[in-house]
Image 1 (cartoon, rainbow, N blue to C red):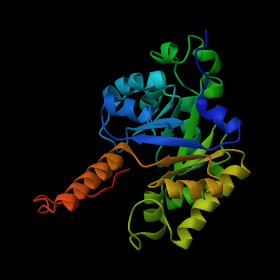
Image 2 (image 1 turned 90 degrees about the horizontal axis):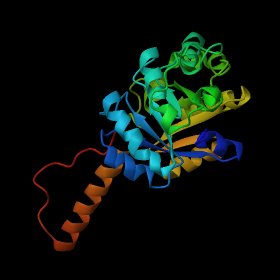
Image 3 (image 1 turned 30 degrees about the horizontal axis):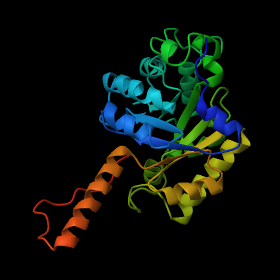
Image 4 (image 1 turned 90 degrees about the vertical axis):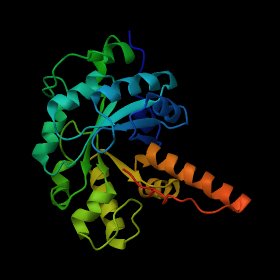
Length: 274
């Protein structure tokens, strides 16, 4: 009997954008906290986060009670790793550095069961977390997102977005800025350069023109709201590392201001992280 359907698809069907959280720390407790904060979905970052499969699994378990849609960003276009993410019970996968239609097709083949793809059957935890009839609905419910973050991907954008079985593309602004402009601008999210805003809006238009969704990575809620106004269907706002660093720095700064104490002997850590 099915216990759940993908909340991401339900929100899209209702005409709303999905608010996505991001986890870079290997901690079931922090995952549980983030999942209870009110996000629609939460993504575990295996590519750049301090998390591997053994860390991801208990994080997925910790988030189950919240009902939030769980996803993971794969480390690369690795069929075995992508299939294990889904078998562990994630509702979706985000794959980095998809640069061509052929790579997008390989990604889809890892996510969909035959005859739509080549995913091997073995939903070890998904059967328990998402429903004993998982095989009957997985192809229709699991979300497959390809990251567009290079000049090559932009050159092949119109072909990528028309890949059958692909649910959407996800813009990584930091790498996309590197790819399109080199080192002319600082790295990071929340791009304000006209050429980068134009590039993001071009991806949105291409995705929607092909009938698929657009995800956008953001550093702040204000920029995410701007992304939604452009048409983004899923927006990621900050991550656990950034939120912890910002909260700790704010608390320390407020205390020192109130008591007039000496500045900290150690330097402030940069508030960054994907």
